[in-house]
Length: 392
Image 1 (cartoon, helix red, strand yellow):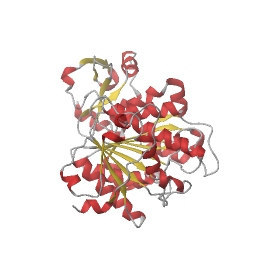
Image 2 (cartoon, helix red, strand yellow):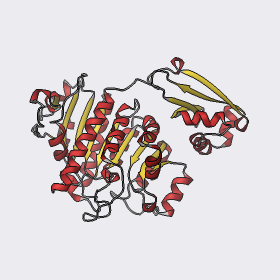
Image 3 (tube, helix red, strand yellow):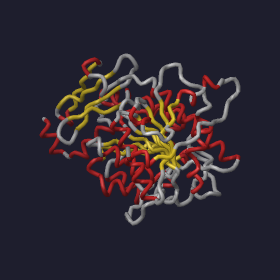
Image 4 (tube, helix red, strand yellow):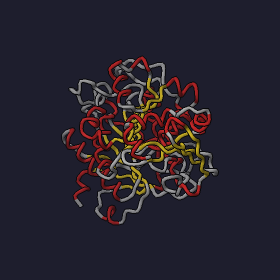
């Protein structure tokens, strides 16, 4: 199989933690790619991890090319799970040039997605999200992208492509395939007025750091439940080298919030790709980043094995059904709730018909107060009034 030429096997050595035996480590339960084509023939994993040691398009965080092996070092010594989890490690991506590695990431990700796997990418710089998106877009007709970042990696002039300007590349090439784009953890003072205007014009979703602080990390669960791809810039966490490889930021997510966000991603029944990028490596301070990134991957896996099998896996017929009549839309606003876990969904305007998206109890309460939820408005404006009338 040609795909093996894209992959380089990695060693299966890791740090051991006190009182966790080798038999009880996560690494002991992993199927490692060792260069044998039969590994793909007999492949039956549910989740596969891929290392992307690439930073040549990074503007200010080149050391993160060493992150994949550094993260593995601390990840696989963590305890395994009591529930069965078929986890594989496909090794690191090869590539003489940046484009070679982009192509390898796209092809390998696409292969595992076609096998029905959930894919974990450990990078590398965040521009690697672009080939990952290309792989996902080849399978999904519309994609919900979720990004965790303190900044917006978007060049409004569309003249740059780098780790600080990759979102515009997706918008330029695949805007029609993007159902929604959500950015979590934004810090207002790091977002230009032009970037902010573009996000608002396109009705993309933003959950700012202040909102997370005010309402809690649980506010990120709603966009993650709808997401197909989560791309995390590690610099969304406080204390990272945010502006250069010398200047750290005092603001950002707390480490425990980053782990909770990762677990929400794992719990999402729709999420197919989870990526952690921009993990600086090298000195003692940066080792904390490697350890935290390994714990974030562990929490994602913990979420994955505890997925609820909610909508769209489960039929809405099994949920409680509520209709709130609002004069503004000329019909009832429909809500659904899973009584087993308290999660909510609502119908919103779609391109051709109404569609169901994740929401929370507060959206239902707003409707009862005769207020249209913000998420409903975003979809309404995206589709236009004519499509709503056609749906009636």
